[in-house]
Length: 410
Image (tube, rainbow, N blue to C red):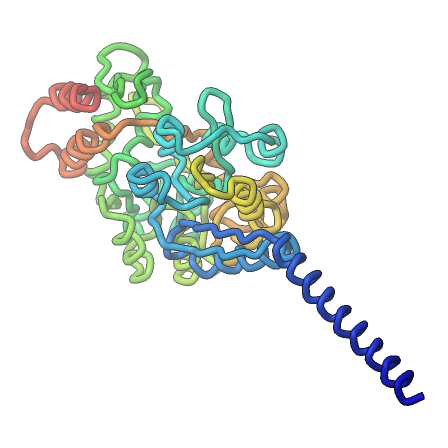
């Protein structure tokens, strides 16, 4: 009897033991079925907190499908191309970059065409889709649509009507013993005066060198007409040629009543001017007896997926997650950056934000920044001469010819 009872309990113990072993094996098997995915994400230092929040939500969403090790590293968006091309296989899997680097990245084989392109195109603003494409082929995911500039003005000194023309702004600013600020040391802003005149600048087919007709001597508006307009503006007591940082300082100390800048200064300007904060598209300016709408360069931030990523499918899913509607809304709330996503851009919250509304209004008169490296210095040299009232006394047409020649140099 005792032997039977002993065998009975021994059998139970063996069964439990075997069950326990099977359970451990099953657990190990399930663990092995979940792949380990290591990804590196590059973005700006200002984006650190936001991107880590977005990455965490991605890991939570897909935690049952992979064991994620996702690292965010600071990499300036404007230098992303150089850092990535310097070592594609060692570069980030997912990265934020400025749209003017797209052509070089695609040509270097850093980016592959996006497979679900039509879906991405359908949910983003046309301008951002164009910025993310090469010859109508989508290579990156649109993230923002706010890399542009427009007019800020203090309604205490400048009315909405006066803000429509640069003449009105300069007169009102001078009357209030204040200034209109614009950075003529930056060719990016100087484009405003030439962009809607019929005078042209852009990339040649080689994608490196430029063409430039800003010195044109025939037509309804000639290069010299624009130059003379700039000289008149510079001579106004209400004008100040100053950097973007100095413009913001002037807003804070009360010396500046209006200026050209972008959404990155919106929060501080609204804190300084409060209910008097005004934002609108760029004004018109007088050129050869007519009012010409000031143009602007536009651009956006894009998310790219490294063609050499060891986990391309997950890198793509992460890029789509970063740029989806929910996270573009979050980006606006946290960073105040304008969305490329159509649904977010059309929301009441966005439309009621003065800076974003002004940028969208200006978009009708903006053009993608597509110029080679030799554009910047010659234009800056010419514009600073105009801002200073042409102190050298050199013939204006000669200066225009030199600028165009150097911009177009091979």
